[in-house]
Length: 420
Image 1 (tube, rainbow, N blue to C red):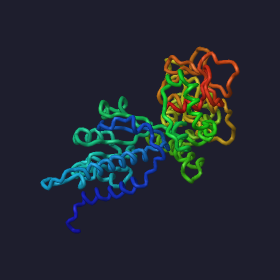
Image 2 (cartoon, rainbow, N blue to C red):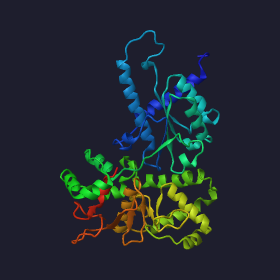
Image 3 (cartoon, one colour):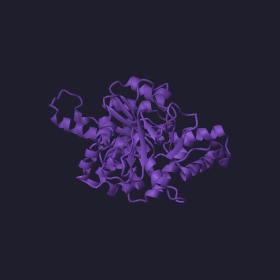
Image 4 (cartoon, rainbow, N blue to C red):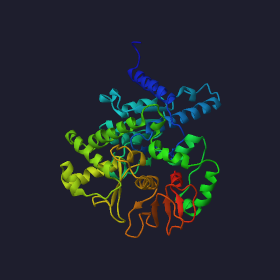
């Protein structure tokens, strides 16, 4: 024991943690993003809001690699001249950067030991807690040519165009909460596929009919709006309590810590969020809000932007406009958040608009428009959102909250939850 290599011992300790976490990882359904990522890239960021399952996503990918590696090792020809066979190598390592080890040791040094031991895939979590994270990622990328690095990124972490260290080397993918399709598949055991927006615009009647032949989506849709966006609804704990904790972590870590805002401002941030929860969807009267929370107009606008960046709210701008201009309207980021204020009951119309925005904006540009429509998508598709279907056909595509099967220009709102 006296001759034990401390570096080897530390690596073994990380592997023990890795093995436990991989064995207990819980991804209730296979997320579509898993098959959209080009895993050949050597530096990949999985960006997503709190509570959408980024950690389990990394651990599930590590498990898949290890299973494939073990299978290949069984088929590897026997070669006694090899110093090390596939069976001797641990290909993956998951590390949380909040480990106290990194208060005195560098990521580069640990990665060097991992690569020397034959490792090829490293998964990094809680990276924002490591002060020089982007600089050391670049060093690892440049130094270890056989290594694949995948890391979780909070929405407010600077990546690609906002980070000089990572420009041109990192590929960023967004992990969102469950789509209605993913939620429906989880609840029913079905394997319903996703569709493009163009598919839905052209064929929504036949697509919705095919799905309704297998399941009644509206029997699940309202539960999804209430609690289905966040995977934590599957846990035995109180969903509302867990989501409240997640929202506070977004404020205290994603906004205060990463944006380096004085902790004394936390109360004002919480009050700002409460005002938006109380009113959204709504146009923003910045002067009134600024006065109510006791901040300047410019600081209030910056705080609103931080809430958007942390994926607590969404901002709807007119075509051609963006921050720091005043948005046309504010929404909560998803319908689950929209129902987290208990001093008012959100209307179905407001809830359906929020759901529409959430379903569309991850893959498409959503704007307000001066035309007689509620939304314009990608500058060419003009949409309305309605609570109930009309006997007369709509003049433009209309997402209808309480419509089961499409007809004419009236598209079931639930079907837009099949975009991913």
